[in-house]
Image 1 (cartoon, rainbow, N blue to C red):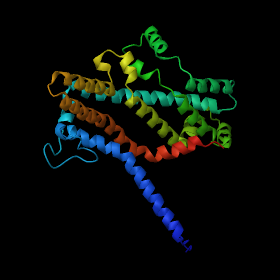
Image 2: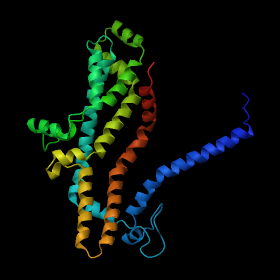
Image 3: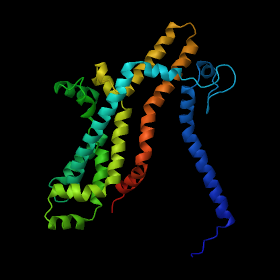
Image 4: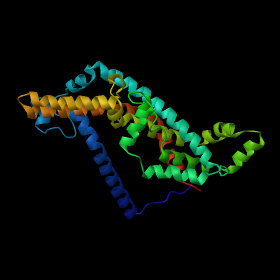
Length: 299
C-alpha cells in the first residue's frame, strides 16, 4: 500500500480556510435563489414588511407558506399553452442549432477545405458586429417570417461561439482516426457520424445546454417579432403577467401593498421559468463540465 502523505499544520489550516471561503462563496451564490423562492411562497404582509430574506417567515401575522402567487400564474390557460409551446420551440431551436453547428464545425476543422481561414474570420466578425434590431426586423418582414414560429427559431439558430468550441474539439481529434476511416472506404458523412460525433458527445451536450437555456430564457425577440398570443413563449407571457400585476396597483388604495404583491408574483414567475432548467441540468452536468474543458483546450 502506498504511504499517505501527512499534511503539515500549515497545510491543514490552509485547507480549512479554503473550505470556509468556498462555503461562503457558495452561500452567496444560492442566497438570491432562496430569497426568490421564499418571496414567491410568502404572503403580501410579510413581504411588505421586508421580513423575508433567506427563508419564509413562520411566526407572526401573515406567516406561513402562501401559494396564491403560483395560482395566479397558472390560472391563465394561455400560460399553460405558452409553457408547452416554449418546450416545442426550445427543442426545435436546439436541434437546428446543433445540426448547423456540427456541419459548420466539421467543415471548418478540416484543413483540406478551401477558404477555411476566410470563413472562420467571417464567423468571428459576427461575434463583434451585428446589423442591429431594425435591419433584423426588416429582413424578417421581407421574408414573411414575422409572427411565425420561424422568427423565434431561425435568426439565432447558429452561434459562432458554439461553432468555435465544437470546431476546436474536432480539431483536437487525432488525424490518424480520420485517415484510418478513409482507408476503410468511409466518406465524409460516415467519418462525421461514426468517428467524429461519438468522440465529441460531451461537447455536444454542452452546446445543447447553451442553445436550450438561451432559447428558454429569451423573450426580447418575441416582443419585436410576435403579435399572436398563441405564439408568445413562456418568458414573454410571464413578463406580461408581471407588468399587468404592477399596473393593477394603480387601481388600489394601498399602492404599497399592491407593489409588494407584484413582487411576490414576479418571484413566482421567475421560479416557474427556472425550475424546468434546474430539473434538466443535473442529467447533463457531467457532460457539461467535460465538454467545456475539451472545447477550451487545443493541442
